[in-house]
Length: 290
Length: 196
Image 1 (cartoon, rainbow over the protein chains, first blue to last red):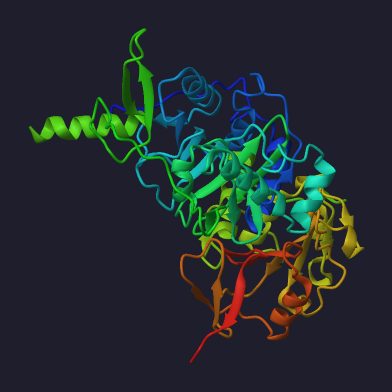
Image 2: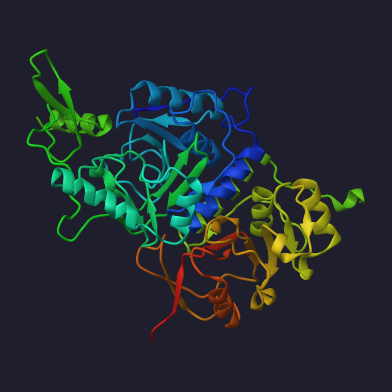
């Protein structure tokens, strides 16, 4: 254990990890089906959580259903361990489940994330839990659930390519930069949650299990480890990730996903890593190297 | 229902159920890899791993179909008491089914879901004497990095029967259990014969 890890005591007034056992069993059964049908959205009886929709209620219900006493939990919000959403959710599970929490990516067994995949490579004993606002990638094209469900059933995804093509026709390139649709195991088109498309390649053949939970929409889905996940593209407009000319102002990384900071009224820019653990690790390594 | 029929189940219902579920999740997310469950109770006729899956996953919402070999007063009474799951004799109503190796040659009637809701399919819990000793087959697909060579002791006809019931995304998901160990076989796993 290191200084990034915190041990806490469970508040016995709550059932372990807040949810009641029958709710957990219902979510667990849905999760098993989600893993068996990679990329398919399983409806589940989403419960009210003690925080509003949009703050990660779907992810929290999944975390509550899978969490055990031996798990080490990490929560990130846009890559950062120290933002409001991440801190609150971490404290919630520290209090209701008494689990050890950490900021370290390799030490964590369960990582709940809002819109980033850590830069540090994941390993086989980890489970990623994604917070998802709108689980259906077809929803912005076809508002009817009945219709999109039929499209998924019939493997009818032509309209998704039309949307990407319209980007090319309008902007000259595919302008979708986050929540970039992917094809899972050559069958289901899936919304990888609003992660930047920079993170999409990390989904492909990842050794970690990926679980996605949408609380308001009451859907969950999964990508098992070592599953082919390809980002939709065209032969003449292949999928590309973002690149920056700048490097991180703190650690100097040129490989990480960078957040843009505006420093003054004149619009002076600076860039820093969005993954705070990765950035802090690099800085401490550089200090040791000196 | 006589009191002697009832036997203790999980010592810690909350955390033992979580451990049982996580073993099942890992088994299904890594088809063919053996998961072990320790410190779980057994019941006459049910191996610890089988019983742990029942206790972790079944409740009032999950009609269960029992193969005749598992349909004993002891198993009925304990599943009714600890899980509260309704038993059904109609295969198409079952969300879970408890089977032995002999029952695998005819999987007709079990719900394989539909194209719009493939998740509404039945999950089969299959208890075997052991998890190896049969024909070596190559498993690949989601959850498997390259391929696994698995030799479950099953009749050859089972694989053809599974193929018949599997029309992805519709299909049946299976857990094979023996003693304290279990292996998952989701519908997404593709099976091929080992090349000599």
